[in-house]
Each structure stands twice: as structure tokens, then as C-alpha cells.
Image (cartoon, rainbow, N blue to C red; front, side, top):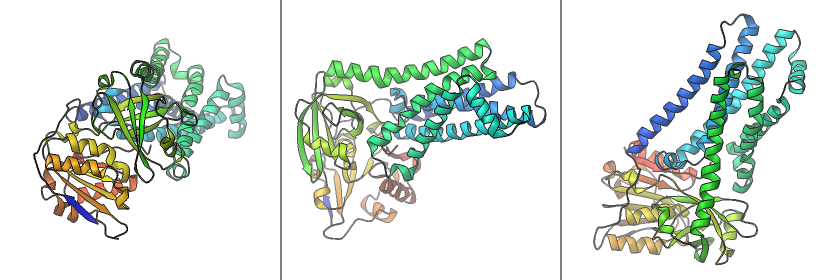
Length: 455
């Protein structure tokens, strides 16, 4: 079934400004430059402390020292990337930071494994023994090596559970808590770096290493603990209402004190921790599904696991621990252009708020399996009628007819597609297909915006 809400009435809409598309490229370049400058400075430590490299021993130990320094530096970067620094989150976007964090994790594990193999081989050649005997000697007799070994094992476990095949078999809650082993690994490995790092023996180098790790720890403590604690104490968020929206989908209204101070923008999300039995131990990301009015925040959640399904049983008055607002999927990305909003399933939630607030002539297309899965359709219809905007719906069942997700169909629906900015939200596979269709239709990558919570 394909239906459309025809344009009627006036064209209007509220729009909020903030750090947006103009700032993002500059912040991206500055942040990447800072990371690579730090890596170059780390290599300079080895260069300054190594007058010459002679023979296999020199090559193996030199390469082991280099990979060890870079692995230690990458551990700090790994932590900083997920410290949820507001400037980075609201300009680069949570999705991009998560991808960088995942890539940094792979590099870190690779560098650590290379460091172990290279340094052990170099030491074995020095004392003329085999690598297995040398491994046992280093682990058992060098300072802080047992802790460093545990750190490596923790990072390897984190890498395994973060692999795509493993992620599909784990609940979000299980993956999230196993992923916290990264912090334990960084903590356990730090002593080994200071105690055994030949290139960190000089006071200035050691002070710089302490400053790097101290800054990473401070960012984590501040933005992931103290700022949410302040939000909890100052705004006292609590559940006000739980309302069914569709089969397996509920909306949760959260109220509190002075919520306007949060300056939540349409398209953003929070990480919500509901302080109820069975729910308090995990925080899940859910987008705000109604334009914030300063009095309450609404999320709309589909039951896809034990945690999300349990939200339907929340009682009014339940306290809420919230972190945010996060996300760069906001109207600032439109940069004055008209928008095309593509949603699948419950991915409509952030786009519903953008459909209401983006200026100009937004067009929304919502895909779902069944008519009853078109979550918040009654609100979308009302917004479309009130704004004179267009909303299209496509379902697979029971009619068995679905709006194709391809360049031709998009051009037929939106003839001026080439001049629009596009916002996507839906499952990862659908999002990849939608992005490919838009690129085939001639929309440049810089005008396609989406965020994923899959990391």
C-alpha cells in the first residue's frame, strides 16, 4: 500500500539553530589533525631515544617499542572518542564518533598483538632463547606484566564480542557490559607502560603520558558521570505516562523540573536508564519523538529485546537517569536546503520531530511491514496537513505492495531531489540500501545524514 497526505494549508515550521553543518568540517579536520599530531609526537619519543638500529635484535625491539608506544597512545584515544564530549557529539555526530571508536579499537588490538610478538622475538634473540620461554620470563618476572597480560586479554575479548557476527547473537545489554572491559584494560595496562616503557623514562615524556591518560580519565568522569548526576539532581526526571502506540510499541513521557534548560533539539537522543527493578543496570539510546516543549520529553520504543519490552510496564513516578542530549541528526544539517526524510519502522521517531520543525518544504517517506507498524502516523498526518507538506507511506503486508527503495522511485516522489538534504533513520541494512539509492540518484554523500545506535 502506498498512500500520500496531500499538501494543504500553510507552509511553516519552527527551526532552532545551534552548532551545525558549518562547524562540522572544521571540527572534523581539527580533531583528526590533533589525533595524528599526537601520534607523530609519540613516534618522536622513539626517534629521540634511538640513536641507531643495528641487526635483527635492533629491528625487532625497535619495531616492538614503536608499536607499544602507538598502542598505548591509541588506548587513550579510544577512551576519549567515547567520552561523549558535547562539542564533538553535536558537530561530528555520535555515529561518526562510534565508527572512529570501533576503528581505533581494531588498530589498538592489532598494535598490541604486534608489540607482543615483536618485543618477545627481539628479547629472545638478545638472550638466545626461544619465544615461548622468553614469554614466560617476561610475563612472570617483569614489573606490571601480569596486569598488562590481563589488559590484553580483556581487549581481545572486547574485540571478539564487538565483531559483527558476535554482536548479532548478543543482547545490547550484554554487549554493553562486556564492552566496559575496555576501561579495565586501559587501567591495567597503564602501569606496564610507565614501568617498562624505555621511551617514557625521561621526566618530560612521563609527565606527558600522565597528562594524556589523566585528560582521558577526566573527560570520562566529567561527561559520563558528573554531568548526568547533575542532570538527575537538578531536573529530577521521572516517568509521567506510558502509552501504547502500536503492537509492541509504546511512548514514554518523562517530565521533570526546568527541562527547558537542557536545550534539546529535534532529532537528538538521550541514553536512558530507568531506575526500576531489572532496568536500572543498563542505559539505552532512544531518540526524542516529540518536539521538546520544556515541560516533558517523549520517547517511542519498539520491543526488540528484554529491556525495551519491559518499558511497557514502567510505572508513573519511576525515576530516570538520563545522559544527553546527544546527536547531530538535527535541522542544522539542512543548512537552509529543503529536506527529504526517509524512515523505516520505529526509525520515524527522530524524523517525526524534524518533519515538524524543518523550514521550507520537507518530504517524508515511511516504510513499514504492516499498516499498524506505521508508528505515529496520526501525528505525521496532522503535521503534513498543518504544514502543507508531503508524507508518503509504504507497507508490505497484507497488500503485498511496497514502495521500491531505488533512485527511480525517489526521483518520481521528489523531482527536486538533487537540491535536497536527506535524513535517514532505520535498521542498519535498510539505511545502507537507502544511502545507496540516494547516491545513485545523484545526491552527494555530504548531504546524506544518519546516525546509528548499532555500535
